[in-house]
Length: 124
Image (cartoon, rainbow, N blue to C red):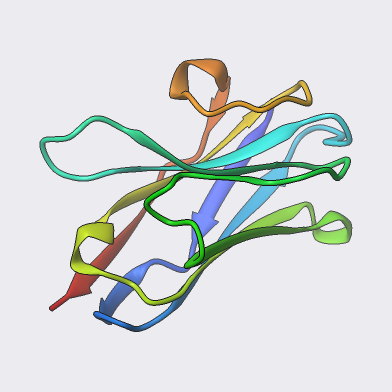
């Protein structure tokens, strides 16, 4: 059973930074793809970023390219999302997701495992 636990959300002013963490447990994640999604009130869940445990390039939504960075610590089984230059429109619940294949996975339907989410609020 894969478990994903997010942390690091909070309230920040526009222009500020936050780092989200996703601690993964329950499997050997060598061939997993890990993704970050977000969902704002009244909107659908949207892709933010993804990477694979085995290396290779990361993927980003256009709206966060240049501001957000996804990274991982293999020894800790933890994936991070560094968010800089935050904007009010980044306000959402952020979810970590996992799928046991290596791939360029950018839709929520492609992921099997989800965390509980962490709230990010950016004030103007």
